[in-house]
Length: 175
Image 1 (tube, rainbow, N blue to C red):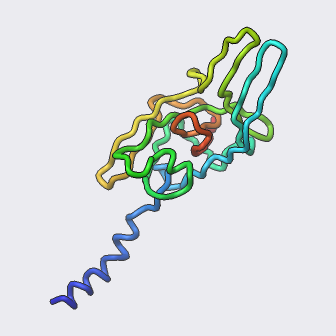
Image 2 (image 1 turned 90 degrees about the horizontal axis):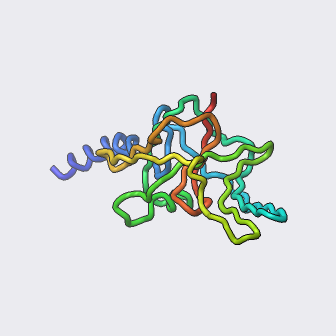
Image 3 (image 1 turned 30 degrees about the horizontal axis):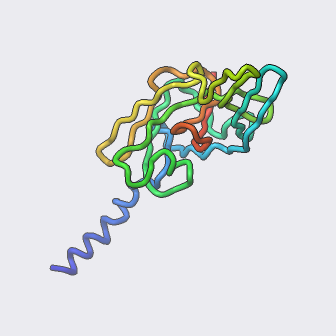
């Protein structure tokens, strides 16, 4: 009896393994994995009256370009690269609140302004609300999360992140 149980387990194990996806975030339509955004540092501009600080990301475009303005992603939490750990927080019952930030496109990089200030002491930090889209997350039966923007996205480059860290995953939406 024990030998037959072991044989059944051996036969169904590959089938179980095929359905289990590695931790990461995937474009739901075709299963393509998003890659961590290539953060390249902070850039600042300081003019006489106004100063800006921006996060910069390598490349004029993300490697993943999508032709839909309402993409759905599948988030599989677990141990992985730092951006995934920032989204999922190991040991938490659900991922952090996620946000999509539209990046400004430059010829050789993309950027997001994170702070502005002026010589009179006025300023603010954080993402420009006009450049952000909230994200809806729904837990699936298999424990993964369906992640989608709460509204249609404009064509451009985006960073999926969990807040005030340049860690995240990037993709583009084509026209």
